[in-house]
Structure formats: structure tokens, C-alpha cells
Image (cartoon, rainbow, N blue to C red):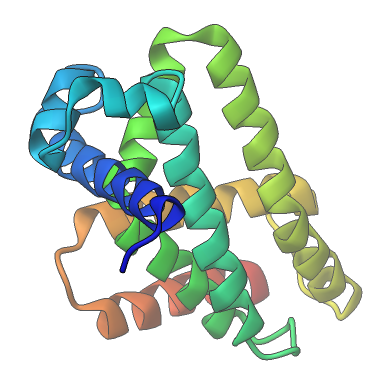
Length: 186
């Protein structure tokens, strides 16, 4: 027998999953709440039992990315100077959550407050990379810019490259790692 809490959790998950399908098909800006509830096979009112609006649903999806990041980072090696595994985590997150990442960028385009939140979040997410790059610089690496700016460069290049690739994760990660290591370490 399923409890009410389990049913509510399943409805919430169904709405989140449906939103990803709708965002992939229509884009975040063109997606409507009725599109999402129809895709999920749920009544429109059930949406508002779980989310205040489309932005709240998007933030919940972003939270899923954070959970996934935590799990992937937990399996990364402790040696920060080995960039490959750390770039692989970044690659996997970008690849797995491409639709949500695009939706977050779209939401930021039309809402300055949301854009500021995403900017602040991105800066926070770059701190571990900046720390890694600071350690590499202390070991003699010649960064193209400060560790903070170099981290942003890596993120921009990696994000763009993942977006250009269909499959081929192992080859893509290897190419990205070589590119970043040569750019940072010569």
C-alpha cells in the first residue's frame, strides 16, 4: 500500500521528469504549466501542490543537478592536480543535465533577478576550480589569467564543447582534458 507521502513524492517526481521532456521539446520559455501537467498525466492543480510556478520547478531541477554533482564529486580522486577526473565530472554534469542547464540560461535571459541568482551560483560553483588552479599555480603552472578568471574560462570552454558533442563522452573528456592541461600547463 502506498502512503499519501509516497504518492505526493511520486507526483512531484513525475512533474519534474515531465518538465524536462517539455523543456527539451519546446524550450523553457515556451513551456507552459499545462504542457508539463499534461506530459505528466496530472491535473493542473497538482502542480501547485508542489511548486509555486515554473521557476520554482526549474530550481528544483537545478537542485537535482547539485545532488548529482555531490555524488560525482564524492567519487573523484583527492589529487587536485589531476585535472582529467575533475573535468570528467564537469562533462558528465553538463551532458546529463543539458536540458536543465539550457532552461536555467533561458530563465536568466528574461528575469534579471533570476540572472543575478544564477550568476552568484556560478561564481560559487567555480570556487573549487579556482582553488585547484591556485594549487596548480603554486606548483609552477602558468595560468592564462587569475585562478578565478581561468576557472571561468575552463567552464565556458567545457560547456561549449559538451554542447557541440553528441555522445563520445570518453573521447570528448580526453580531448577536453588535453586542451585544458596544455592551455594551463604548457
